[in-house]
Length: 339
Image (tube, rainbow, N blue to C red; front, side, top):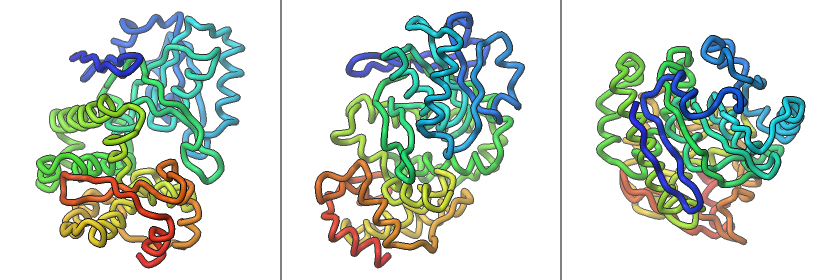
């Protein structure tokens, strides 16, 4: 197990790479901690959680809502959780989002940490302190930025992960390569999903590399005033598609990245769209899609990256170099409806 500490504006996060779940007992006292997980993870890994106080939720983005938060808080009250209680989210992005949010508002703040169990959770959702819930068709509209006390990587959880969730997570890996790391992009081109699924060392290295990319960006811009915005590549259009068409997050982001590449052609002179599309397809992710452009734009214009009548949109100058372009909403509407 490798432990690294990352400092932020008001706190720090200890990231435990290549650790076993049993190491969690050394990080937090089971008697003073409550695990929050979902039915799928609990069903597959109940033995790991034996001896821990556990709240089990229904799986899926549709449950990342205020009613679930209320239900969890009611259970915490029934379990007599106090300000010395530590909450631990054991699951994918939905569970880590919910756990971090509940921990931030219950009794005005509890200690919390994550054990991400999916590729998406390992490389993206558990990192950076964004915790929140959806409101209707608007993703992550309510939430906080508050860093977890710890993140523990137990790669054995991936043994029960369905292939669709591997694909879902690799969308975020490809995103990181597009905005920050052309060498990683080339490595992904030279490999395949099956190779990462079958080679433990390769996936461990890829997960750690991606976690470090996001951690470094967040350390420099914790509250998303500058460089952190790049992590939203594919997400502006992607989030609008995800909620309206019931797509997995990675699927929606892959489509969002595809169209962001075409917008990049128009506004940044980007010339590598085909390369990005081919890589997404290689990892079994969707690229082009039929959707109601105007309907999607009506959701998109409420995105958190909007400032008055302009949108901060993440585009590419070249593979490995993302940029943020401020686009007037009137211009963006024309671009989106003509894609």
